[in-house]
Amino acid sequence: MTRKKVKLAYITNDTARKATFNKRKKGLLKKLNELTTLCGIEACAIIFNPFNSQPDLWPSALGLQRVLSKFKSLPEMEQCKKMVNQETYLCDRIAKATDQLKKLQRENREKEIARLMFQSLAAGGTPPPDLNVIDLNDLGWLVDQKVADVGKRMELLRVNQSMRAATREPSWFMEMMSRGVDDEDQMKFNIGDDVIQLPSFGEDDNHGAFWSNNTLFP
Image 1 (tube, rainbow, N blue to C red):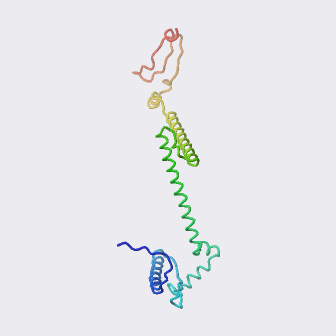
Image 2: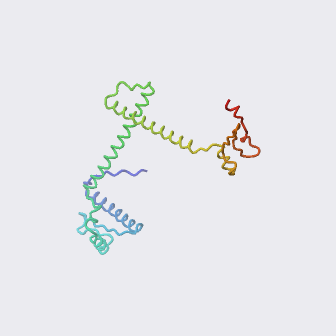
Image 3: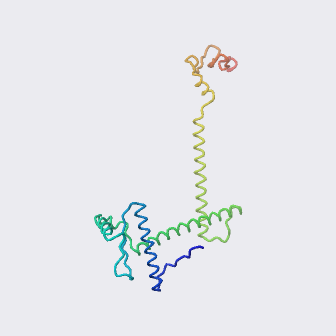
């Protein structure tokens, strides 16, 4: 059975209000005890109520005095740093809820305009005729953003492709480096009277073939 949600409003019935006070006070003091035990901190509570002429002190009068003395020894700025009253707390909650609402409205608007953009693309690039000026402006802004994102992506792919091509070595160069070529086998062109000699990388290689000048340069 699910727990019934409590309506946060002043309880007009005296008996019900007193019973609720005692139950909530007991729960509050239990939470304070758990907080100090689990986290190793110092805390106290002073509860004034119309049902008792003396306030309820927790954990005791001596413990309350110790915590208050430690609090008063702090600088004034530190004392008020995180102190809020009911009005300040509610204003802060309202501001956070308003910001969250604006964020959700902006996200919903972007999704709505994105749907219109895809509908326009499916219709051959023509937006629906019933759009107003605001919708058209938002649609144009979203299209410009998407085009800019595609351009950035294409530029990034071109840069990556150019970097890969620049770092790729020719196969013959890698083979020469792996063999550790001697000085006499370094790549060179010996120009004689009638031949041009290419370097030889081994006994079985054909890279050191001789070509006639008469054949190459008629």
